[in-house]
Length: 303
Image (spheres, rainbow, N blue to C red):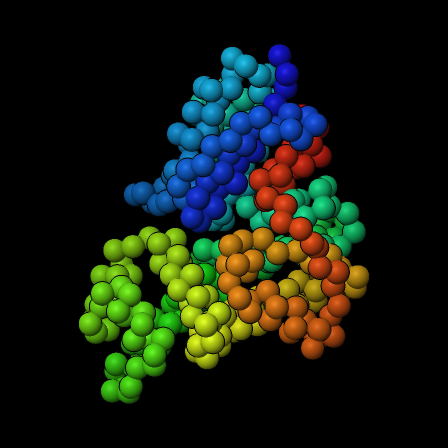
């Protein structure tokens, strides 16, 4: 039977799973919901387990499965990754590796990385990963309960907190704020409590599309929110430059729906870097991050 590896990109909004042959041919694909680990009674649980089990069930009689490589958003909340790898390996019957989703994003830029590279990952959440001759450094990625600037969730949170501030100071609402309240069916700031606390992080971040659409229509406040997101991400990138002692030319890539699809964000990152004296080479193309899991397994000799 032909050998395949299973690649998983478990993100804040959705989980994508593919099976690849050694020649990078995709022979299987599944899509599921958010793959972020969830805390239940003080323990981290992975919502994508059933998706991976289904894939194994579908593939095992047609292919020889060699490896399962996962890239997981929010993996940092899991204190015992090694034991969870062993747990899933025992469940599936195949070796499993769990890595942060930023790492597979990095590997999707140019394949197995060489030289100096930086990945900006910004979708539901955000982080920036630097690479230099085998060394890696992650900046950000602490989650929305701590700090996650430059993400879709953070942009929506900025809009919501501005509405609260206007209500509490008896100030007038902006047109953007009025439109947002109307969109979610809220009549006052107090209605924002159930809106936020009864929704998941990804459901709230999805309203970043509203901000993007309004910015594209010329709304000044929406543009300002998105440009600030870009400034925040540029700040993370510059931290990576300084902490890793990187020197241009550095390959800089972007992954994640927010930074790639919302207007102004990516452009503001690049603009801020140039203004501060950095001149990275921008990685072109829209290579799906799922391919990064393939390259990571290839580097390990697992396929």
